[in-house]
Image (cartoon, rainbow, N blue to C red):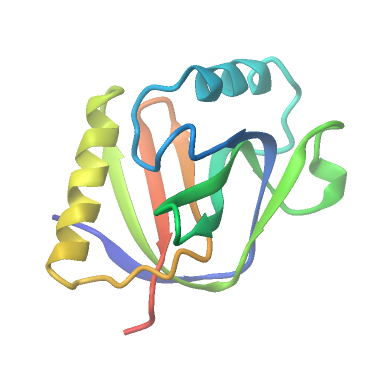
Length: 147
């Protein structure tokens, strides 16, 4: 299992929201999520494709909001009508995977579950995000306690 611990500056992800607990974190298929991606991909985007998971609710054991869209650095890059999630500067565990959907996501979440179960990471749930460098790769960043 490969992952690395990295320090990141504040990260912005703009796009359209998908509310949970309709879709639990790690769930692979969701019509609302697919609809949001379809809509975003028909807009002019201010940066590379990305998604953010914010507003974690410990009572529900899931995130309340997922923003599907793109990374950006300023409000000038945000498409009209899109929301912005600001993820805090901090320590993140970076997991990467290459492949086809849904296997790529299954592989990532298997790696994450193993890292948590073996106490290699302790998640803070302060905001996680994914970048998509190309159609077959995902870089997933989880906020974690510093080592």
